[in-house]
Structures are given as C-alpha cells and as structure tokens.
Length: 262
Ligand SMILES: Cc1cc2nc3c(=O)[nH]c(=O)nc-3n(C[C@H](O)[C@H](O)[C@H](O)COP(=O)(O)OP(=O)(O)OC[C@H]3O[C@@H](n4cnc5c(N)ncnc54)[C@H](O)[C@@H]3O)c2cc1C
Image (tube, rainbow, N blue to C red; front, side):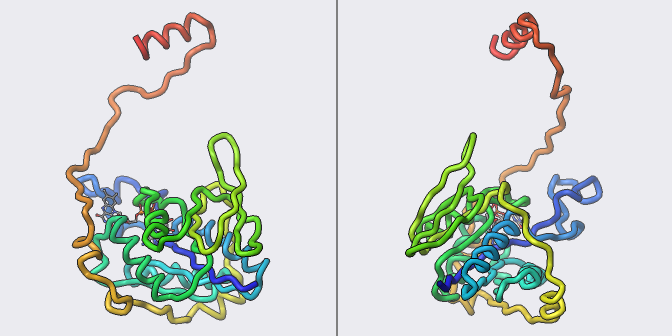
C-alpha cells in the first residue's frame, strides 16, 4: 500500500535557553538570541510517519514548514532522518500570523501539494503553545482529526488505527483516510540522523513557496489575516513562596482545607 504522508513541522526557539540575556525590557523574548530547533512534538510526528513508511515502503513523506528562510533546515533535518522531500512556505506576507492565518497558509499549501492520505503534526509548539493549528488545518481541509496520538498501530482497508493518550490511560480509535493526526509528547522520540542520508542531503535545495506560488488570498495571511491582538504583556513575579510541605495528620490537612476553602 502506498500512503501519501504529510508532516507539518515548525522551527521554534529552544525555550530551554531562555534566560535574562534573551528577555527584552517589554517582557517579550528576543527570538534572534536563541538557538532554533524543530518543535519537539513535530519530531515525534515525523517518527510516526517514518514508522508507517517502514510498514508500507512505497509510501512518501513530505514535510511542510512555514517560517523564515532558515526554517528550510526543518525540511533538511527531516530528509536526514528518512523523509522524501518537503517545502518551505516563506514570504513577508506570512509574517505575524496567528493560528488562524497560519492554518490558512498551511492548508492552502497542502492543497497545492496534491493527494494525501495522512497529515501528521505535533500536538502543540513550545513557543506559541496554542495547540490550535493542527485542528484548524483539519477543519479547513474538511477531514477528520484525531488528537493526542501516541502510536499509529496500522493502516488497513482505508482506515488508520491508533492509540491516543487520554486522562488516566489510552484509547484505540479507527478513522477513515484521509485524516489529520496530532501527535502527543508521550509518543516515541524521533530517531537520530542517518549518516548516509546526511551526506546525501546536506546540500539539497529545499523547494520554497511564497504566497503567489500557493495562490493565497493575501487578506487571510500574516498580520493582516490575524484577528489576534496582544493587548498587554505582564511579567508575574511571585511574591510569596508558592509551595509548602505539610504533614499527613488529620489536623494539618483540616487546617489546609480551611485555609484554601474557608
Ligand atoms: C496571543 C498570541 C500572540 C502571538 N504573537 C506572536 C508574535 O508576535 N510573533 C510570532 O512570531 N508569533 C506570535 N504568536 C505565535 C503564532 O501565533 C504562532 O507561531 C503560530 O500561529 C502557530 O501557533 P502555535 O505556535 O501555537 O502552534 P500550535 O497550534 O501549538 O501547533 C500545533 C502544530 O501545528 C503545526 N504548526 C504550527 N505552526 C506551524 C508552522 N509555522 N509550520 C508548520 N507547521 C506548523 C506543528 O505541527 C505544531 O506542532 C502569537 C501567538 C499568540 C496566541
């Protein structure tokens, strides 16, 4: 069976490196001062795609990323691990996109990429952290979505079966193709780069598309197409110690209940 798989992956600042030196006076992060990585959940989505390809070797994996020109590395890093190709969506018109405008650009580009069976993305990013983009892309494409996926089990007779992470356990669901899956952080980590693929692709040109290439409606892109407005940013400095150790005696628990709930 040949599956056309698309992985959505975003380049994000490595938030583990956020410190005093990377914060601006207004409370925003100086993104240029931080190293960039592929969003961790998106790496897990790529791993699920690679495992599917191992089960169905005729399949193809295309990676799509929207970002500045340096985000081409997202596609290249995916090629080093076994993806077949990918596209960088980059244009000044896409700058300042909120989730609505991001999902519009991604869904429009997917329309240009052609036939697909499975779209895999991360559950959420470590910078925007909204966990909205995957669901919005599915909605725009009019296909079913499964969120919090932990492991894709198999694809049979036009249906994909997967395990999803839910509170207190997991559940197995079966969904018809085509569909979009958001992969949870509890999924397996992505494999490392493959040395041979690294040598093959280290100078590979990554196909870049701009707004004209995907025939995007400019009024739905970037800051113009983003209804989100940041009204205020506040730095919250805790004034009291936020944790306390209490004993397990009835009296101490009773006192805590009174303190919390009156
Ligand atoms: C209030 C607010 C203000 C913001 N202000 C700014 C700002 O000033 N500057 C700025 O740069 N950003 C800003 N953002 C972030 C911007 O909206 C997001 O970068 C973008 O819309 C994607 O949302 P997300 O990062 O929350 O993705 P999520 O919804 O958490 O992502 C889910 C998944 O969708 C896929 N995905 C998401 N984005 C992409 C992408 N670009 N390419 C490919 N796949 C993708 C990935 O698979 C990802 O794991 C802001 C966000 C909010 C909520």
